[in-house]
Picture 1 (spheres, rainbow, N blue to C red):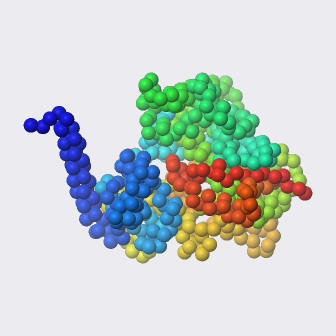
Picture 2: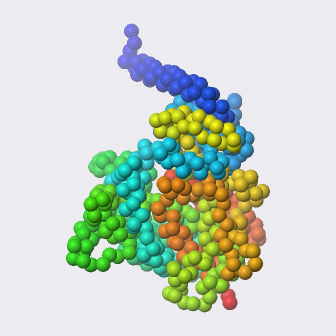
Picture 3: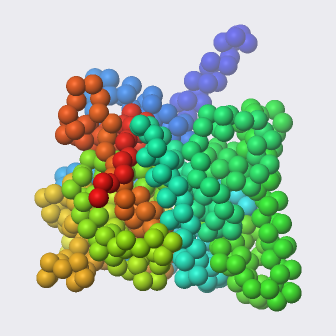
Amino acid sequence: MLSIVQFPPLVILSLWFLYVAHSTYCLLRNYLIARKTGMPIRVIPISPENPLWMVLDKRVFIPLFEKLPFGPGTFTRFNWRGWEFADKYRAHEDMGDVFMMVTPGRLWVHLCNPEALAEVLRREKEFPRPLEIFEMTKVFGDNLSTADGKSWTKHRKVTSLAFNEQNNELVWSESIRQSRDAVHYWASKTTIPTIADDTRTLSLHILSGAGFGKFYPFEPRTNSNTSQKLSVAASYKESLQTILDNCVLLFVLGTNVIKKPWLPAKARKLNTAVQNFKAYMTEVYEAEKKAFAEGKPAANNLMTQLIRASLGDDGLSETEIYGNIFVFNFAGHDTTAHTLAFTIYLLASAPEIQDWILEELEHVLGQRPIQQWAYTTDFPKLKRTLAILYETIRLYSPVPIAKSTGSSARTLQVEGKTFVIPANTLLIPNHIAVHTHPKIWGQDSLKFNPKRWIESPSGSLDNETFSIPQKGAFIPWSEGVRNCPGKKFSQVEFVACLATLLKDHFVEPQLFLNETMEQARNRVLRLVEEDTGQVLLLQMFHPEKAPMVWKRRVS
């Protein structure tokens, strides 16, 4: 007879056997389906969507599997979060513009063909976004990311009204103000190891001003600020900062779970921040409804514009407004912060590109006081500055894109061949691959070269034009009807920030012991490439290892 001590291990072993048997059956079934497509196939025996695997893939499982007798291979190459950045275009160089990964969960199609990608993004109804992936963003309510069908059309219409030229004016002025304060602070210090933290503060403050009409002076994050007790979340700014710093925890646990009193202090602080942030949004919502009823003019921030645009019969509900405001903050905060950080490190390694931008800044802005820089007349002329943004996100696209075939099989033509993609297949536009493939970008496709975006037929700055690649070759904001509504917002923000940072200053790496400047620049470039990976977004893991030095230009 089995003892009590013996029974639990036997149960565990039986459950493990059933799990392996079921996974093997599903893998074989999916493999047989995949073979019929005619695509190149790679078999991944553990689903990348397995929760335990997602948490421990690169930290535990991949190093363990690499030490086994069969060594590195398809499984360890393609089955960890962020493998696309490390692999660049090489998988598609090996297998062609389209290939399929077979997992026990579902089939994954990876696509790196501009024409086919443009077609997928155009055929939104046939290749919808897999909404289940975006359900976690429903923290405060339905939003543009979670809506579908007629509901999505309503969300898109209203949110498009909020992202307008009046708001862009506010983005421009607040980005200049914050960046001016930031570069003055950086230049006052011998060295700055906190660039990545400071760009998060910069982005947060711009969002606070342009999103809510709450304006703050630039102040670097300090240990005392980040370790204060729960009551710090009582302020709007600290509440939003706490939420954005802990998005992964919030998405995993959800708003109901973080309320539990037995959870660690970090979760309780996050819950307090969520409650206070919602209370603040409710206060603004009620005040704006009252102002509208009294005939008062609207402010230009996103929150006010969204509320005003929703007061009609076809507007968003109160919770939908809150849901979209959260998504705007989530989508706009870290993407801008990481992109600015990448840009600063890349420019510190490329002084000739800093000089190239300066030529444009002096030509367009001249010696005018910073208060006279105008969004409507200056922003359209700063093409080189915008090219820095495009080149940075070409190489370091912060946000991946996912599509699905939905409930029906779909046909797609790739390189002259027509493929039938099975129902419920996840289709991944491999943005890293399509952004770096030499057949699209040339033999210097992996080099940071913003000049590739500028055409200058006459050699005159006045006649320079922006070079746009073919549809589907550059998709950081997606394309088609589901493109990012905040695209112009992000461009205005970045251009204003970079123009302010570099007009009177330049950045270079701090020299280490016995190091030349050329060695320092190469070290920073290696760190950017080797220390970057996917967390929630693409980011550097240890940017503090490359301290920066900011200096004022001597005229």
